[in-house]
Amino acid sequence: MNVADSERIRSLLLRDGYQETADMGEAGLIILNTCAVRKHAEDRALARLNSLKHYKRKNPDLIIGLFGCVPSFYGEKLLEEFPHLSILCGPKGIGEINSLLQKAEKGERVASLNGKNNLFDDRCILTGKKKAVFLPIMQGCDNFCSYCVVPYTRGRERSKPSLQIMEEAENLVSQGVREIMLLGQNVNSYGKGLTEKIDFAGLLKLVGKIKDLEKIKFMTSHPKDISQNLLEVIASSEKIEKRLHLPVQSGSDSILERMNRGYTVKDYKKIIKNARELMPKISISTDIIVGFPGEREDDFRQTLKLLTEIRFDSIFAFKYSNRPKTAAGRFPGQIPQEEKERRLKEILELQREINRAKRKAVQKIL
Ligand code: SF4
Image: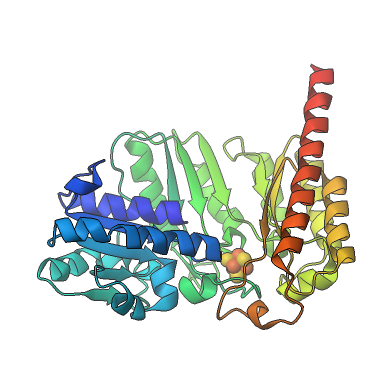
């Protein structure tokens, strides 16, 4: 979503006559688009912001903007903490970039944090020749997983009307795009709250009808909302990529419950079984969090066991990162850093073994 937001910021600026430069010393405007999902990403963004001070000293007219989830999370106090900063803008304020810039050019220090939900005000603009693009179909999330900041930074879930998605997709294809990645925090719940009656499977069918569009990808799916009908639509379309990124997060039911994920390990395994029955060659990847508060050694072993049972094609594993405002940040049983590191190392080593074994099996077949 962040990459898609950066592309949206970039395309709005290019449309208004800005030009890109690879030399920061030459820039009149520098925008940092940030992520707050883990503390490490946030620390890096703020360190980078600090390092821009000397550009501002050299060029007092330089406008520096901090965009994305970090400003949305911490608000206007960032303007006090970073006097060289002119613009603060959360993910929901991107559509206001021009008015923010106009004010900043007059020397004002401005913020657009949780104001209008204007994701759908402007259309996806193509800058340069591209074969593959991201197309956001929704914003925000209603799931409130206990460890996650997204509902606080991106707000509640809103789906883009299908008519607008089709108009944008057709326009992109007419300009030479052949591959579209439909994006949302939880694409499987697409359609909720719209006046039209449509779900994600219905949207995939519609987009699949666009002539000359060759490939459709999507991200991210939530196990609690994935339906058999959706799997069947994916299986039956030649255009839809046979790849499912389905974050499981843990192999322990008690941890999944504390994470507020809304499914059990049994439910998850059933989805994978159904997907593989319909599409034997489907590639399946997942996200795992190790060291969630209260995760006992036995819970962690259950996650390792799940990995050996499912044999994912790839995993993205992370140490739990305690985020303010989230419920899990207040849970007892926070796991020491070194223990989280040990668990992460072990899980990554197991996945490497699985990958090696899979590669060997492929070589044998070849
Ligand atoms: S589904 Fe959960 S983890 Fe994903 S964005 Fe929503 S709250 Fe965060």
